[in-house]
Image 1 (spheres, rainbow, N blue to C red):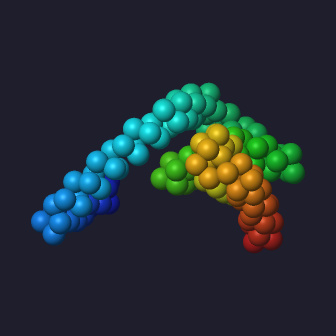
Image 2: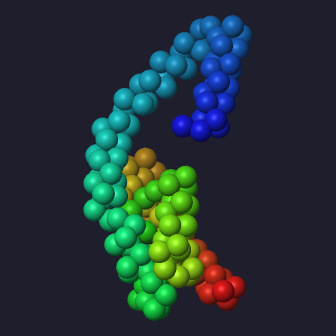
Length: 160
């Protein structure tokens, strides 16, 4: 964990103590409600985290970079966006992966498509997203994110 994480925890603790001294009853009520919400969402999160973890062990950076090479062209871009749409990674994992892929011979447009879809299109989380919002909003969000990835690829192709 980086210093940012510890600062965030410290700020959270300070604000919780401040809230507790300001209004003990509301703070305890809020904590109880938050714990209930956490346990309510836990059955949805555990399978998702397991699936993502298993998928990330199967889809290694070496495998991905073999698909995303300089000569892969349009097929490589499509493959990158499909893999990125299925998988999910937070930015602090995705960006170093992108650098590693570039260092192993992957092309900029393919890596851009992969990174954008990794962080914005979430087919892995579609069931949870549909449950908490709606199926229609989940579909629209994923489609808009996928189209956004195509726009990013075009911009990167023009720039490089």
